[in-house]
Image (tube, rainbow, N blue to C red; front, side, top):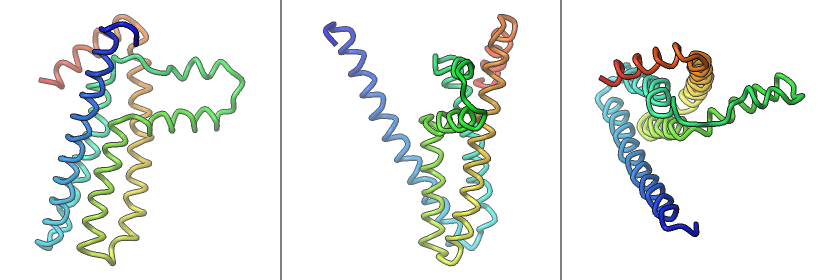
Length: 170
């Protein structure tokens, strides 16, 4: 923090965090409003679209935005004498600490809150269903992240991943 460039970098990261937080809050009002409007219009079957959007964001966004950023490599942790259960738990907690996963969990909570307000009798079954949905997405995301890390371990694999990412972004 003694250098001016480092202070500017931290300031820009904080500003980016504020903008990202504002974006998450804005999108959360959209998810809440969409779920509430669908329930008010007696179309709860269309809540599947909101859940599909959440699934799509949860699985695709980390691959697009953070696929090339440096992070904790769990293969390094596996060198130490830990059990498979502890390794699995650490990997899962690391996946849940991803900002995109946290945002998706918050958006899922906003959908549940709309259900709780508009159809209170559905709140408990929806909570269990959304918990299973979140666990499935978290584990599926960890599998996809592991596959991407595996493909990026070779030069040819990195080239293919970059090509696929650019095609998806287009």
